Each structure stands twice: as structure tokens, then as C-alpha cells.
Image 1 (cartoon, chains in turn blue, green):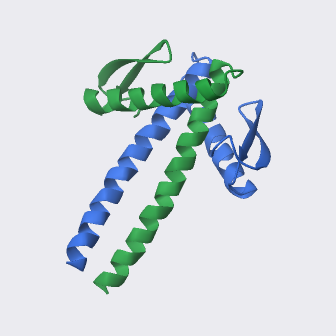
Image 2 (cartoon, one colour):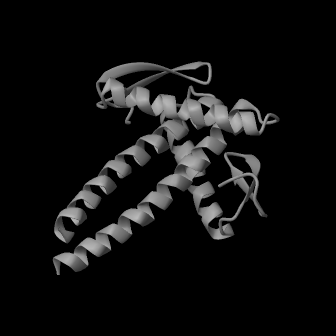
Image 3 (cartoon, helix red, strand yellow):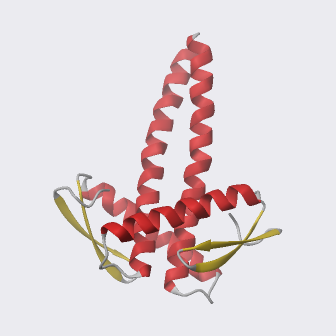
Length: 86
Length: 86
């Protein structure tokens, strides 16, 4: 989701409006926005003392953590494929 | 990175301190924190009008976007593996 591209999509996350400019489909951007909103609300419900910035930063932390975990899983699959292909 | 577990790791992201409680290694948690901090600073440098909450939310948006993209790539690898294994 780059800022330099063409379509403009307006989304709402945690009570604030964001304009996403990029080449991704509206459906994809809305799916991402819904996931982030859900994760922020879950995190906030479990940690009621956190302000919005901290909720957002910790949501980013959890998302990057999940990304790295998935990356490791993908690398294992790639190794397996490489072996199978000889 | 769950809140209910055992080790406590203190990290700094974008000028604020967070305590992460979980079972992940300190090295992993620090790697995640550095990535989030880097991403927030890059996004902020490109969009100087954004406040910290918006920088954090958009960093979460970008991270979830990357996660979904990687998930699709992983699913393609899994299909390829399935075919190769018969």
C-alpha cells in the first residue's frame, strides 16, 4: 500500500478516517482495515488502560510478529519444495 | 505475543516504552520492535502531517497488508507441494 499511486479509498479504523492511496482493490483495502480495527478493539478490550496510540503500536507489533512467523513457515515450505524438485 | 504468559521484555518504539509479556525470546521481541520503530519512522518521514496515532495505525495497516500478501504466497507454495507429493 504505497502513497504514490492512483486510487483513493477512505476507510474507518478505531473511530478515525484514513485515505489510502494505492493500486490495491477497494475490497482488499477494506479487508485490511477491518482486520486492523478488529485487532485494535480486541487488544483494547484486554488492556483497558492503554491509550489509542499504544493500542495501535501494539497492534503493529502483533502484526509484524505474525508476519515473521509466517515468513519462517514459508521458508520451510520453500526448502521442502526445493528438495522435492531436486 | 500474548499478555498472559511469563517473560517480561521492555522495548522502546517511537519514543515510548512498552512491556511485552510472553513466551517469545528477547531477541525476537527486540527484532519485532525495531521493525515497527523503523516502519513508523519511514511512514512519518513520508507523511509529516500525521500524528503518532495515525502513524501507528497506518503501520499496522501496512503490516497486515504484507501479512495477507505473504499468506497468499504461502498458500500457492502449499498447493504446489500438494501436487508434487501427488
